[in-house]
Image (tube, rainbow, N blue to C red; front, side, top):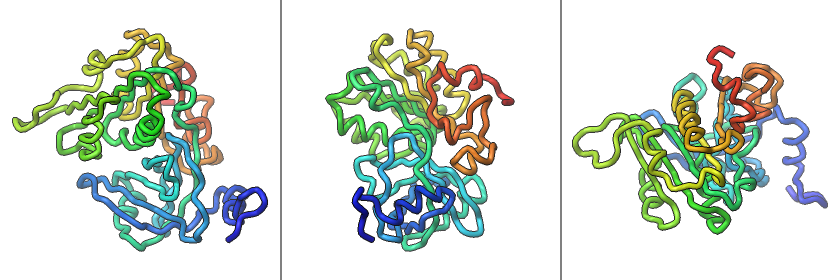
Length: 290
């Protein structure tokens, strides 16, 4: 359908006016990343352009008969013609999405949420810390940084997984490690004798990263306990809480802050987050039962 004078199609106007209404998308590609983790490549079934997204935002994926689930966008923000989502099958909805194959359809709402501060971090060193599936919401940041590499200082990626078999995007990690403008540190919790890399928790590698604490932004996504210890270590290294960012995907169900399931203290994670600076969320982030 042709766009109006502002370059917006009728489908896009409908999505903006009715954000609870899913758009039909088709699976145009699928990749099995790990035994329980897969990536879906999606394009609009209605032919309308996909909205531009920012690193850190998420979509609500709807599979009829199963329900909806919030899934971070894990593709390249410079290539929004395909929506890319890496998903772990851990519940009814995600297990249902796991059964989708090329040609199948699903509903999509979004993008929603606050992004990683890639613009505000211009001119700074970057420390990107990911644990497990937490690399997926951070992958768009890495794509953006490598596309605009001259805008940043030293860039350090620290990634940890449970075992070598649980490493996500292994071929991409190898390509990134081969670059001269990005330092990649990988660790696993446990390994067999074939593993030649580091063994231990992510925080053990922060000391190997090259950054100036006074001019660095740290972006963290992973299990809660991993993020808490990373925050503590970064603050101990001299980073200001306002320059430490965490991504929290907590019980999100509607994406618009209407249902209240993701309330965290005074915040609704789906609307006020999922990316927060630590000085803003720290008080609530440390409480287990809020």
